[in-house]
Amino acid sequence: MRYKWLTTVIILALLFSCGGETLPKPKGMLRLDYPEARHISMKYEKFRFEGNSLARVGREGKDAITLDYPLLNAAIYITYKPVEDNLNSLLSDAQRLSYEHVIKADDITEQPYINPEDSVYGMFYEVSGDAASQSQFYVTDSTRNFVTGSLYFYAKPNYDSIYPAAVYLQKDIRRIMETIQWE
Image (tube, rainbow, N blue to C red; front, side, top):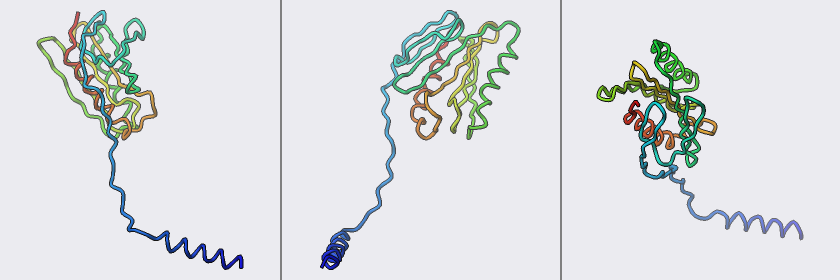
């Protein structure tokens, strides 16, 4: 009697569980909306630039500042160095730092920046892939001032996950490069 009842329950469950046609789920994309950038003037001892108002400015030492983005869990580290007959060495160090990420990077795109009116010349490096830094840059006036910057996330680098935030912050980096003025 017990087996008969169990068999009946199993058959009824199988009959009623097969209902409706199953449809595949559509692919979804993660949508992250960040506030529109509002730029404010930021000043350092040797230069000034326009930065995003979302960033909290911090000092990292005598010649370094940090633009911390708590909303994005990221920071842009900016370092100033004086040019004292060492421009080739500074350029070499900045380029080497950018290409240290080539091991994990899928691609590194170089984008030169030239602004002769304000004597600002530099390079922006966009890094694709699971590298530690998604962007690097340097700017100089070639005679007295040299500034480098790097974007880092406070998370394990997973390019697909951080891509929207990386694009947002790359726009901020470009704005820094475009508005930098030497004191």
